[in-house]
Image 1 (cartoon, rainbow, N blue to C red):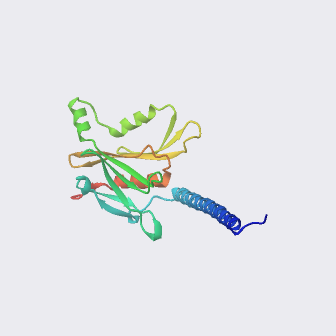
Image 2: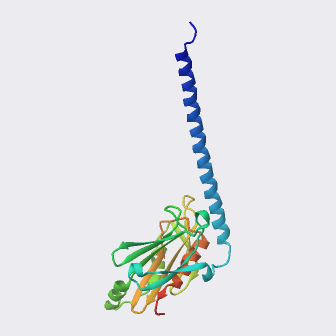
Image 3: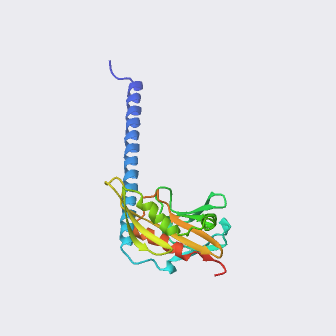
Amino acid sequence: MGCTKFDTMKKILSLLFITSLLMASCGDDNSSDTENKEDAAEAKKDNEEGEGDDMDFSEMSTVSLDTFGLGMNIMLPKYDGPMNTIMAHRLEEIDEGSRWKITIGQEEKEKFCLFIEDAYGDMMEAQDAGEEVDFIQDKKDELAGFSFKKIDYVVDEGDAILYEVQYEGESVPVHYQVMGVVQDGDNIYKVYSDEGITKFNMRKAKNMLMSIKSMQGKAA
């Protein structure tokens, strides 16, 4: 028997359905390829920037920390966002009245991430116990206790460090972290990068260190 009009229509609909699936699949592949290319281009740019000189403060913008109730300013680096915009920073309170977070860039692709921690209580506790307070040395002692990490200090100052972190094996890339101590009158803060982020290159670390060094009270 010959094909009926109904059979022909079923074949046509089946072909259209298969074609649409193939086109959707190709679209997903192209989207994935585009995202991968953008990520590769961004990584290349970050690495190239890492080889440059320190960022000038003129390339940073001043941000008030009044949101945190700190009465201080900090200078943050400018990063290009979509449509020639500047990526917005985010201010978050992590622990009420004692620890805060500043982030630039989307999650898992952060270009900048600093924690600000009120260390006044720790300082007073140590002083009451008759102990010397040195938050930077405490951090260096902590890092020295990890046998699976190799730490090299790029900047090693009394109130700030920038260090390279290299894990044994190749599962975690070589990356950089920072820490600084900021005093504002009688207040004292530990400011440090997010050690859970292992994609900070030298350039990003230098930017974070400069932000730490820029922190000061508004009356200063």
